[in-house]
Length: 282
Length: 319
Image (tube, rainbow over all chains, first blue to last red; front, side, top):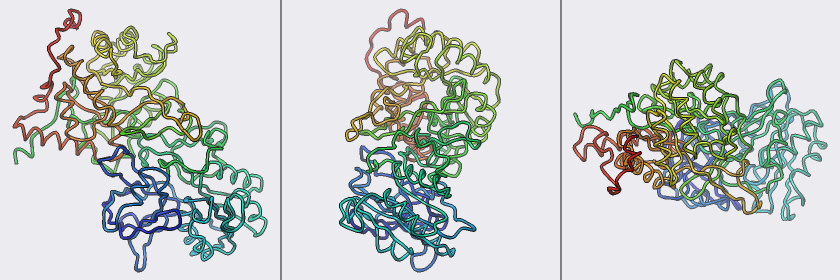
């Protein structure tokens, strides 16, 4: 984990989202899928906390070496609205990479990646790394409407089979991402499941994977204070190793990637919460 | 060059601090997290998260919501309990920081006595800070430390048992002076002002409290004026009592204001979460102010701003 003053190389609109690319080689070189950065807000505002944003892309090689990209939803709150308006060539105070990344399967090869809304952004970084390791990637992605589906063309480029779902049917199938998971698992010999999103989505994915005895990893979104383990506010209920008891882990340092079989979903009251994640969180 | 080497070390009720800036309870992690983010030898010290007699799993998420210039939070004092704390977390904190204050909390007098007993004579404990914001299970009151009788009992018991200085962390409401006098008479070496006041954040869309615990606590810059008033009032009533300002300090200027009101040292909480180097930057800001005023020690700032000459009540003078 490093703190840098990173120049904004570019910022662009992608549907309902804003994507920012930073020059941050110290972070980019070590970033892995599932990790996040903590971006400081300006000093003169009433909103204080850093924003915790999943790394969408991190380039170690090639023309974009040393760059890092994350995605914000301008509608999520004042901090992300501010980030959506910052100009290229300005600077941001960024700490990262933070958190425990996804791990890659050694033996198994057929992976299904599931995400909704802005949470999909982190899955492309994962998909690239999986493909580079010779894995097969399928994806189920979605959003409320066409503009809320993040980079559907990128999903097609990286994966074998893609299911796109929108709430209003403006792109792909009409419905929810949760509805599309079981059909996607039936359609291909999936061996490993990865998911990113809110508690409602992840708990549903956890239940499906439990019923089918599929190994899975999920990246949770929980409101964070700091992002580096100081405050203990990003609590995730997890079972002890022997399963006898449970306690609260920290999403920022113990996660954000968890084995969904160890998360005690019914102790997580955000289950059933609205699909729009509050901004203070990942 | 002499200016750059100006020492801002202070003696806080017998605890030597390299700088008068401490990391507030619940904002310094467990000893490992800050390594690499800030040079802890340049921070006056760390106050541990609040430790209870038994392990506490803490409150349900969400545990934090932003408010204007502040955060509303509740962790439910998640901690491993005092026995696991002294076995694992305390050595890690002591390895990371020269000066560790251990924050202790409880719901009964017995809890505080038990924790103080475990901490007694333990290496790495520079001082104890008594957290009094929890519910009082014996007297069935929502906040133990809101009543002078219990402040006297609890702080008195801890102070009698402890071999290190004891700081009482008090709520900063209208009766802060009477609580401060109670703690002083009970044997507190110093006072931390203020504990976070209780607060509520509402999830309008969900039509429910925004925190899993429903009600939480307010921290952050929004508290600074509340803290300054409490420091000034208590300093007027108890001019010799060492005071540690806690609440809304995020710059050297803020820290200087707290000292002008009567604080000997400051704690930095939310600002550390946002910027782990804040405790160092704030200490530098204090040095700049000393240079500007051509004075040698932060102690010379203390209490330079007064809030009128209300004569202390006779009982306050005795304290």
